[in-house]
Length: 421
Image (cartoon, rainbow, N blue to C red):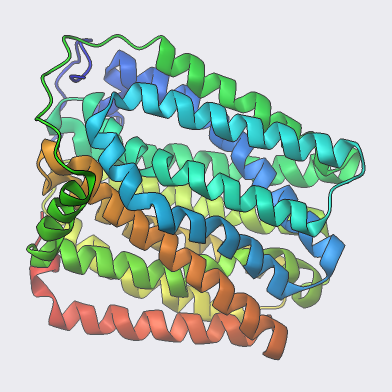
């Protein structure tokens, strides 16, 4: 599959000042516009399900540790199959593979909705469905990352990746708030049903895209050898190794704190499902600001410095959030955490993608996704265990302290990352 056959207008910075054309340059491509709209609708549904599912699990179990188990169940299956997913993403049409994975995940959402409507849902059902969703995500995540360069010209790749982050965080802003309201008014079943229906948007978007001639793919080799080739490439690049390690630490020690937000809303802030939704959305609003910050950078040669700054800022704000007990201030600080972490993750994604040849893109991004989701899996489990044993605040303090120490160390020990443009 080649990049979009639709034409696009060239954009350029306006004397170093902010430019709307530069910030939203990737939206000039018809295929990317379809992708953006379809994914946005689907992700709103996904965040509604994630938020409602977390609160339902906590209502059923009253256990912070069980929240961690759900995150672990989803992450461990992603972890096991992610490298295989990268090989498949480099072997077959990525549009076709995404259609299959999105259809599979839609089916899982409908199953959870049916169980909930029937009043049959139990915690173990959610664990099993989370594990099944992880399998789908193992093939979906690296394919989605590798698919974006097929939708835009290379000069707008960093912008498209940043706008992907904007899409994700727009959904994070709206999805949890909608979930909190729908959960409070109608119950979790409707959140799961809405998520299932939302997958139709991205499936339709994929089917209406137009591409040029399909290029000849390189001859297939043994699957294990193709996995090794991707791993060798990552291992041989000091810069990519550092970026992926940083993502692993951030996902384990900072991003995974989100699994505790339902328990935090109830136990620390004395709230309910609506409070949980507001916390999730505040984090999403901060993340949206971070994603727009990355998109507005354009060709400015400061991406490495901004990435390294985010690795320090995110954990610092998480430390502050751990001490706050008022809802308004909690919303403000969790928004700051979202800003710092999305700044870090979006820039890491963009920087890695610019360093990867097209023939290895699926496999390298599967390593990236493997570390990201695997680290989140471990972090979710650790946060849940510590919160169960010693309380949610201590879990957040420990995670933030480790991530901050890593960020400061990386700032001084990895100048080659700060020098990235």
